[in-house]
Structure formats: structure tokens, C-alpha cells
Image (cartoon, rainbow, N blue to C red; front, top):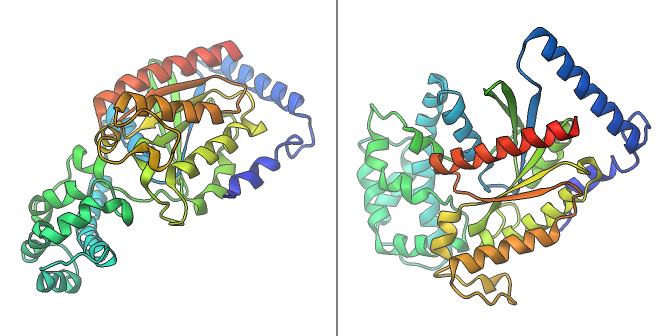
Length: 356
């Protein structure tokens, strides 16, 4: 599989656009950081900004983690954001139930609620009048069978949460909770920056789209990165890419991790790897053998064995000269993310003080 990242990495192997060597550029960056730090110390403003670049394939949890940073450090979401998520929730319920019906048809599974499906297709939006049709289809035996076989078609992992809450979401006075917002998925396009301050340290998280078509935009985020945070969706070892259903998602993630970590642009940059969606992996590994992707795996259905094996596979692909720090995460859990980010924060600040 070829990624557009490869082309980007090549651009920097012979030094930057100025023609300077990699060593000269590194000295310039260090000098610039020291000047910035000195200026901030003089005028009493907070210390230098720590820039964390969130990378990984699509649907690995980057944007969910970014939402958690807003909850933890920016007092949650603004009114306009909540309104946008309110509309998105209603829209995604309709899209999800239609996609399930299409998935059932693709798999040759018989679904009995034809009239309800027709009513959903004709509806322009989710409301209390058509919620009964959504509930009827979601309760259908064939739809439940299709959901159990969802690995064979494309559907969001939190689709069941939305459908279980359809009546609440359909109500006129519905206001999405933080729990709802964390489970709503909107593909990241472009570059989103989230800035916040912790104990006089400034952080800037840069969230970029993980789909192949979005990776060419990563180039604009490479400068002055304090650490790469690479997201691995543990549950995707049996799933196919949305962009190319011939390609296994975890295989793509492994190859991308190798390419990023071997880039000279991130020669000495610390890497923080989040083995994410641990909750989904814990359940899936009991039912779907890890040998589907890794025939040589010998750990059976054991969660810890499977986790350890996947962690080793990624470590084997790591080509960076900086440190690699690994955390097991569930980006949907605010408590888990809070604990993990406390460790990440300390690691990044300590690492940068050594660089200075």
C-alpha cells in the first residue's frame, strides 16, 4: 500500500526548503525555542507551547480524544457546537438505520420491516412521527443479525448507542450530553487546533483527518512538534478500510506507523502511542480470533495476550530515534483520558526541558 505520506517524507530527507542540512536546521530550531522561552520568561507570560500532533488512520479515535481535551480543560462545548451536534445526532440516526438495512441486503439477510424502511427512506429528518419506524427496524431480527456481522460492511462502532437512544434524540427538546457528543462521529477534514493551558504550560493539539485523502494536509503541521501521538484502534484487526475495502485497517495502520516513525522530519521526536478502543477489543477478541490477521499469534482469546502481541507488532515497526511511550486507552472514558494525559503532559514537559 502506498501512502501520500511517503512523498511528503521524501521532501525533507535532504534538509528543508532553505537548503540547510538537517543538523543546521535542528540547531536553528533549538535556538528559536531558547529565544522564545527567554522572551516569555521576561514578560511573565506562560512557558512555551507544547505542540502535540495527533496522527493515525481514519476512525482511530483522534477526534474523540480532542473532544475530551475540551471537556477536561476548556469547560466543554460552546452553544454553537452543541447545536451542531444536536443536528448531527438526528442525521446520524437516520443514516445508521439505512446503512444497517443496506448491510443486511448486502449479506443476503432477510429483513421483515419493509414498510418501515420505506418510511425512513422517504423521511427528510428524524422526529417523533417517524421514530416508531426506526425503533421497529432496529428491533427486527434480521437487522440484529446484520449488526452482529457489522465487520463485513461499513458502519460506525457507536451506531447501537444512537439507535438505543433514538426516542430521546428524536424529541424536540433534545440537547446532546457530553456522552452523546463523544459518540458522534464526523470525519475530520482539514486541520483543527485545540489550545489550552495547564499549570502555566501551554498545549496545542493538532487534529488532522486520518483518511488517505486527508494525509497530504499533514505536511503543514510538521514544524516544531513536541511529540507525535499515534492512535491505534485495537478493535480493527478484522475490519476493512472505508476508502478501500480490499485493505485491512490494522495492516494499513502498521504500515503508516512505520512510514511516519522512519521519516527524518521526526528524527528525534518522541512518539506516544495510544492503543485505543481497548473496551471494544476486550469484547471482540473473545469472539473474533486475532489469527484472522496474524496467523502466527498463539495467545488465543485472552485479552492481555492479544494486547501484548499487538503492542509488540507496532514496536517492531518503530523506526524513530526518539523515545516510544505506549498507553492503553479508551477515548470514550473521560477518567481514563484524564489519567493518561497527565502522564503524557509530564513526559512532554520533561522531554522538552532536556532538549533545551
